[in-house]
Amino acid sequence: MTSKPPNQRHFDLVVLGAGIVGICVALHLQRRSRSVVLVDRRGVAEETSFGNAGLIQREGVYPYGFPHDFGALARYAVNRTIDAYYHPTALPRLAPFLIRYWLHSRPARHAAVARKYSRLIEHCVSEHDALAAETGASALFKRSGWLKLFRSARERDRRFEEAERIRREFGVEFRALDARTVQELEPHIAPVLCGALHYTEPVSVDDPHGLACEYLKLYQNLGGELAQGNAAALKADGPLWRLRTAHGDLTAGAAVVALGPWADVLTRALGYAFPLAVKRGYHMHYRAAGDAYLTHPVLDHERGYFLAPMRRGIRLTTGAEFAVRDAMRTPVQLARAEPIARDLFPLAERLDTDPWMGARPCTPDMLPIIGKAPRHANLWFAFGHAHHGLTLGPVTGRLLAEMITGETPFVDPEPFSPTRFDR
Image 1: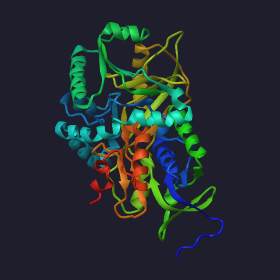
Image 2: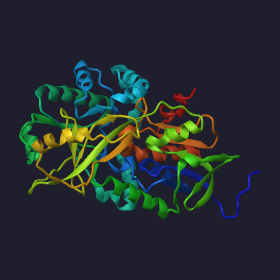
Image 3: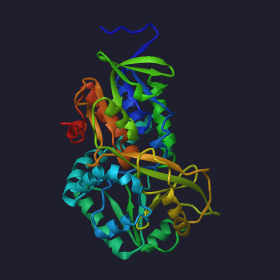
Image 4: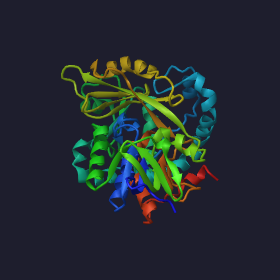
């Protein structure tokens, strides 16, 4: 029988990773009367969850796939686009993941993925609302949706048809806007567009980091604890998990890995070989010039960057950078996007000293890994959310907490099971 030193604290669960997913998992477990400690090597939501476009993407039933049309592949091959960039030296290491990602992105398989993924996405706004209502964080939400902007009639018509098909299949609502209506909605955007898709159901968040902190406050108000420590130090000790933190040693009856792009560091050490990779991304904030304002978050679809009004300023976010997670920062997409964004909307000076960079944790089948570890009785996983960590944090938190506590899951967890990669 394992004994504990007198000064060592014991918890029912330790949740590793204080990003939006880890916070929501810990919160949902704590409200089910479990004793929980949330552990991160840094502060709360200071990594991937700190920088994003600030969208709760109810429309995002199709996770971002690998392009299959020749034109897009040709553009990416020359490595000069804003929406995608790669480190040539990383390609040999990334190739196995990219091949599997490309295969899962083929139209028929991508559609099958969407039918599974939509089961999570359809709850994203309601689950955020449920948590925000308890915290006062609803003030961070704006319910006017977001705009996908088009510069060519050909691309506009193609995406209108695609949106109509998705509405029929998944009930995703939108408005098809002509150029005049876009100008009325966003009078400070340059008149270079021929239309836009207005997704009306998504919610935008003007301070994603602030939202994560509000959820953390709720968790702590319920009695949850926060500690600083390195998840890589987690060790099995008989039926328990043991971890040294800055607040002292602790043990827990079960552990949840919610480490985002660093999940594989721990899972490999525990004997799991998940096919994970990262898509890195950058952001910068700007002051709006003069009296200009931006009412909706907007995607310049054919150029591949995003502008979102945030409390700090107008946030410009880039597309995906395919690189080794810890490789040197190369914000070339930001440099390419900035002059184009300035032509579209009157941006003034930069407000950040340096560009922010984060890494999105990705699986080749575009589905997150949520569920019980196949070869450990007291280990659970919640990572691999790619572009939708903010969107799916509360959904994942509730789903995993229901699984751990033996409740009937409100979403079928089978498509997201870790066993699909560990057989």
